[in-house]
Image 1 (cartoon, rainbow, N blue to C red):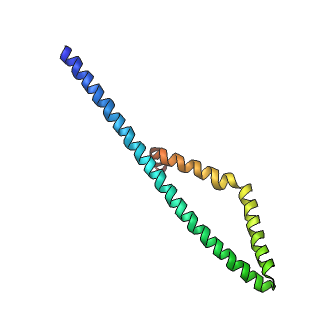
Image 2: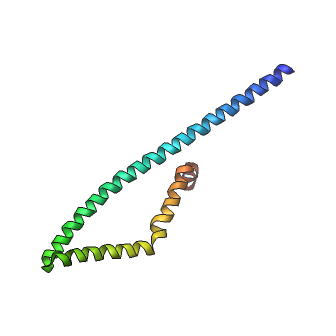
Image 3: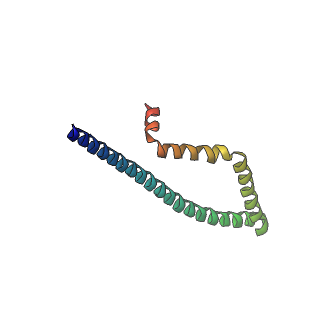
Length: 118
């Protein structure tokens, strides 16, 4: 009887240890996914920023030559970005908040994403 209790105790402790290892593994997987996504977003964002910056300079000079005023060209580009800012502020929940929430849910609960597609 005592041997059976010790075996059960040993099995329960082993089960708990395996469960903890599984939790650690899932946590490591999720953290590595998060960090890789952050790195990808950071590099992509930086490169997009440079592209938009140089395209803005080109557009400012191009519009400036058409209007015979470099200042007006850059003012038009700034006005375009101001309109983009207003649109972003109006639609920020649709553009940023909902997709970020959905991405985080998909990241931490991939089973629910697979269930919804079937």
